Image (cartoon, rainbow, N blue to C red; front, top):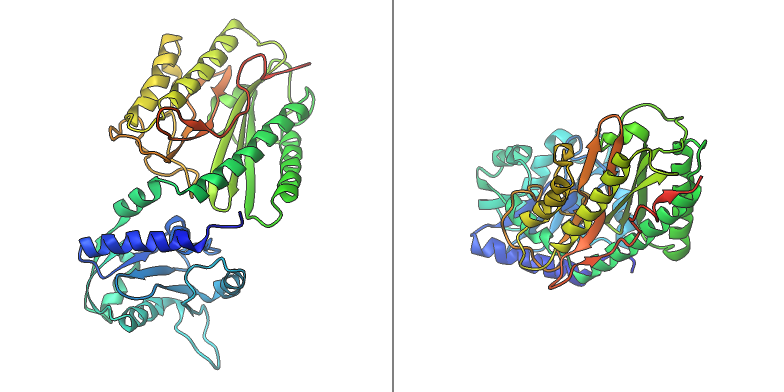
Length: 398
């Protein structure tokens, strides 16, 4: 596997240049982290709000990047292993040097202006994926240059995944499935849930090193236990809370594999459910997740994903316990567009990727959520997370 091939970059540049030509734009300037990775194959090691960057794809010239000096060794290493798609990069510095001086951080837009002019771009309009305020000072050197919002184009471009990205997603899913199985083995009454989480992540890390020693993999997540699981993202404190019999546990496992994110979440019950209410909420959440997954087919309406899950939950009597949408787009970012899945009426496209995570949250009782990563396909979706979700399979023996 080992990163996306250069052919992916070439295809993306061709699409970008078609967009530039159709809209009479001179270039696309990418300023935000996720889109920066999308066009350069380089994960930013800096936050652009304090160390601004730009990856520029001209319509009729070679791409280039403007970076902070902090990134220069990262860039060189990425270039040496063939990962960096844009080899032409210049950097500004954070402090003046006695010799070999460069532009300083406050002057970074002057460096950007010089690079644009070297590509013959000194008038006309360029598309920006972030706020034009970030590079407005370029107009001090290139007063005839204008900016246009290109963010909607970048969202559309990232919507459908290429086959190599889908392979990364499948590999990430395999690691999350492995992690869920280890979590189920590690959970026992009396053990601090934080210890269980860390132990599980260590096992996942060892498995990732064994299977994929040369890949870029990040593993994260947490488990929400007992009544605190009624908060979808948990509550602060309770790091030493121990697992108790009859606890409801929502385990969140996330893997980023070579830049593609996979989510896998499951609800567990420790021993027999504390009440019929717990059993009914668990079953309703599980059925709702399958209902949502079943809607993820090419040509179906995006909003039907949320509608199908909502109907199951409301029919089960838990309509007032829905406090978030059913899912969201996924890819380079864990949360990608569309973020308005509950109200988005466009048709789904083949090879879009979504989370399917309808939830039921009962204050004082717990939360119930199963989250799958799903690839939209014609006729039948591809569910890459295969961890069981039935109450019998997700009951922790005591």
